[in-house]
Amino acid sequence: MLKSLPLIAILGLCIALSHANLYAQSVPEPCPRPVPGSAVPEPEDLRSTNGVLKVELTIHDSKQSDGTTRYCYIDAKGRESPTLRVNPGDLVILSLKNDLTNLGSGAATTGQPHVHGDNEKSENSCTSGAMAHSATNLHFHGLTIPPLCHQDDVLKTSIQAGDPPFEYRFRIPENQPPGLYWYHPHLHGFTKEQMLGGASGAIVVEGIERADRAVAGLPERVLIIRDQDLLNPNSPPSKSEPVIPKMLFDRDGDAANTGTGFGKPAKDLSINFVPVPYPDYPPAQIEMRPDEQQLWRVVNASEITYLNLEFLIGHTPQPLGLVALDGVPLNQNGLAADFVDWQTHLGVPPGARMEFIVKGPPPGVSGLLVTRTVDTGAGGENDPNRAIATITTSRDAPEPRSQLAASPKPLPPSQLPWLGSVAPVRTRRLYFSEKLLEPNNPNSATEFYITVEGQTPVQFDPKSGVPNIIAKQGTVEDWIIENRSNELHAFHIHQLHFMLLDYHGRPVNEPFLRDTVNVPYYDGKALGYPSVRLRMDFRDPNTVGDFVYHCHLLEHEDGGMMGLIRVEP
Ligand SMILES: [Cu+2]
Image 1 (cartoon, protein in one colour):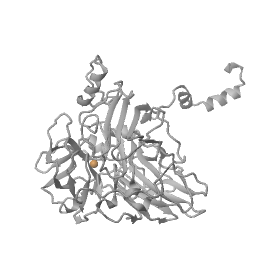
Image 2: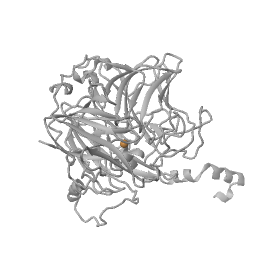
Image 3: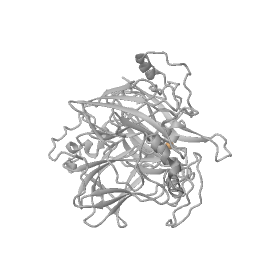
Image 4: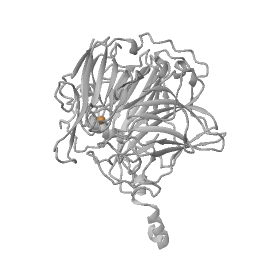
């Protein structure tokens, strides 16, 4: 048929149908993504009905022509990374099917053919602990649910490619604070790869307007900021950059901190999967009604990128009304029910969440959501200044899909005394450190550790099963976490929240809770190492069993920066 076409038409066809287009037409992309400059889409909401949320997710991967791999969760109706919306007390029944095909170099399964029945396979998923490129599991970040198989165990749960769907079944605790949580894989050694490829989604525990009346009636948006490998890794810097810093790479092969706020970032960012790729790109688009207030619920689902969010009109940062951190309303401690902490910038380490009130620009004016540069230390990645999204206004802008109740019934106060007023039973000291395997070669492979003071630094071994820390349910402890390395780390612990008492040697006694906190880097000069002091809450009856604490920079976590805690009943 082509032969009958004039030559010019054939040429035109050849140009129009690039190899990539042909590929896209013949094989549907399992993990489709918007193009740069798109309107920021809202993830679909899956809401519980009659106290039950049933979800079927399948994790897919898809190799891209540039060598990177996308990962995605698709539900039974084809929706990517849906937001799970639940109420305290709800039962979640989530089936996860592993359709990963990426049998990379780390595929270290037993090689035995699958001859077991489906039930047996499901139980094997609870005990195999097999860590492989093509295996996966889920962690429900921030929820105080038990660290058990089919709930929130990440130590032994490993779902192999092609296994029958694996069922997660857990109840959202009645006392789970209303706010933003999230789900992502947590398979030791492969977490970075899967999350960098996009495997993550949001969980909203409903009722934040019951805790804080300042957000009652507001439209709300879930914004998931992820990082990803650079789309244009070989591009020179934008001509608009005021300084062109010398390009260096850190030990992970990422662009190293230039200390200038500019230069090539270690990773590109995306917002609800709209990429904002270095160096020249149109920011993503968000449309609001003029002067409208909205609640923005932001999770930093990045593998390694720190965020420092600002909302600019012209050059002026606008007030952002923080109401919740890491899923917990700031007034959980008994502060006024309309408490709002107005800030002009919000630092969000990887893994953390910030929920804040944003006021749309006045008519005819646009704003810009940016992340300011973060100084990650001499050994850290480059997190330069970046525009993320342009905020334009229009009187008939579509409202976000979800709106908080206007006259909510107030949430009953917490049954437990405020964490800050409970005496700790002991103080423990831990420290982050790194070791170059060839001390004289700055590009040598690095081992990452988090060590209990007095123990020998070792990389986390999922097979060990020997706890680094044994604590008692019902108690409260103080932990001092030191950073003896020259880059930032973000401390995170499963199954509980903590209070930040001291930051970098200064008492802060934050009157609110976190589950992820930045630990400042060591500059090589100070007399002591920088540290944070945390009050750890082991009072919840669900906070029992074996679970982990680790750095939430996933290259570090996969590289060994994780420890095991056993909380005894
Ligand atoms: Cu780290």
